[in-house]
Image 1 (cartoon, rainbow, N blue to C red):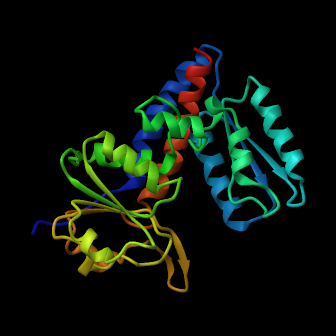
Image 2: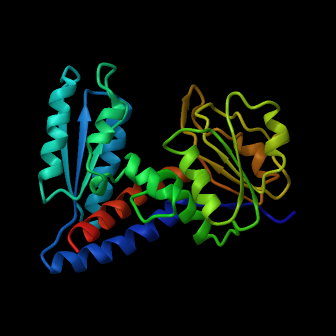
Length: 283
């Protein structure tokens, strides 16, 4: 078998950022600068790291980035009022409330309060609905980033058996819809799936989005499959994906590494969504 292709998310994200930066520069010359506001509630260390990555990425492409830090004790009503204020602020093109939120706040209520045309995470029911009917809304960043990687590495999706492990609203379900739109035959597996291996061995494209370290092993992967690892698990052995990389890469035709695979693409797609929101809102 020929050497496994490493699907380099950092490289693709860099290309995408360069393209976004060019468009932002042209818009800025016309007096329009896209703006992203991130709300961070409490002091979750992982959330703070993700937010800092997003801020740096905005800076690289010329998008105005604004961080609103709120205390963990903030009431749900106060948070919703802050979101409504940003909904009405014309300088804000994208609103992102960093998840998870403290337990006393209803995440779904917060997501539903963000205006759909400013929902750069792509979590609002209107954007999810548009995705279901092949509409042009703002789509969930991680699966959209994965599709970008597949396209740029010229990986054929049409007619392929695609298997997704994980059924979250953020990755699994929108990923299935995007692959379906490009004419893949899609299977979604989850914690109640009987004989997971039986399904994964049929996959031409396997997307692991479980959130458990190295749950996908070499014996579960078909020779020549394309393997996309969405997992980022902090373990005693450092950062590990949902896929046991060393073993699986010997069988796969192509695989995303962790780190440096899907993660950078999620952030690059967030920038793309912010730019799109700006262009569509401001004509």
